[in-house]
Length: 239
Image (tube, rainbow, N blue to C red; front, side, top):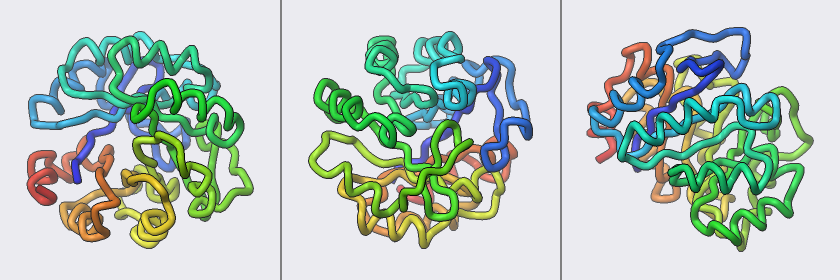
């Protein structure tokens, strides 16, 4: 299991939100490339970059900042937020992104998901953002009437690299991950799972690690930025 630092972008800056609320932002850096280089220098194997504005508005809004990050580091970068067309998928992958994350498009445009997986096998991640057990979409501003653990069954047979499971209630709260939700997701999901939301301590990472080989990664954000968790210590805890 690898530890994946998150870089969330809003108005071109590196920020963190609480439970996805756009009005509750903390700005950690005006230049996200500095942050990306920092995590690379500290040993990160992969970065998770999200266009928060794009997720809400439905199309990329921080592409310039994302492309700067892709040029600034040599480690792989996965990109999400507002990716709802094949044109955007192709643009990010051709710009150097290792993988793209589809969320809203998976719920509302199954044909696009199938096309993306067919054209770029193993380079598509599916973001399953969960609120009260249901799948949230459009930058977490709407909740679909789809049970998260049942929903992922639709991914069977597709060349999806992994599912990113985020418990919205835990995100940015430094209260630990939803282990039961992750356990259920790992049990039902036909592809590997990356955990996200609330991961705060090395003990949280150890608990995720013992869920089994299905959980291949853990995305960490606020705990790193607030200095609660040290990236090197986090990686050592699950190595």
